[in-house]
Image 1 (tube, protein in one colour):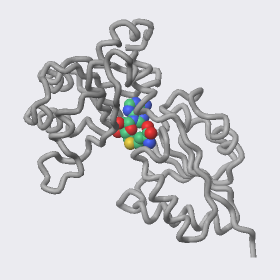
Image 2 (image 1 turned 45 degrees about the vertical axis):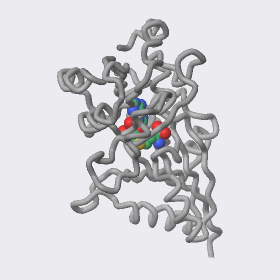
Image 3 (image 1 turned 90 degrees about the vertical axis):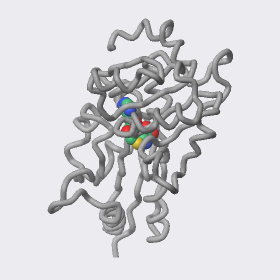
Length: 252
Ligand code: SAH
């Protein structure tokens, strides 16, 4: 019987390859198998070692994307074959990345695993646009939320009343498709329509684009510019600081 391998749940950071941890880089370079999504971005995916077997988890198998079960099974099976398996995800694997779900399945199957945190896009992408998510004079709190949930659905995991009244910075991941509904829900629940908002597409990558407006106008502005995923949305007074800190960013 072969010795069992191990699975490394690795966050690749927000896209700039130099924002990947040294630990992540070393493990990637010594992996037997790498199971990846597209979110790490082209530069990082192009740098994966030739000698590793690569599995694109976002690729269509037959006529469907690999399901979460299929991904879990690949990780388990390759580890049982004695391989060093890297499960590569964008940002941090435990921030809206399903990393924890995969880890739970590995534990159930008795597979050794290790998590390698990454710099999450939720913090690094605003930073590259000149937006600190906290600031002594502007925001003493910040929260991360998914923008993916339909705010009109009955059993929402999001408390719109609370969100509209929240005095800190709100960072939305996966928020492009539902932008209009989410902004509508915030305003309807009493958030000031003049609250500043930024949407940063492809943050930390060479083609990063920053769109700044207020809640009342962002939907029109975003439609006009054709804003697309992946993008981070930041809502709150800290957005204004980009007027000072964002000046050095030549990539907008
Ligand atoms: N685990 C990841 C997030 C996965 S959810 C992390 O910690 O960063 C996917 C969402 O992440 C995208 O819809 C987008 O909102 C955000 N995202 C990830 N990388 C991004 C980037 N470089 N620029 C803008 N948004 C990004």
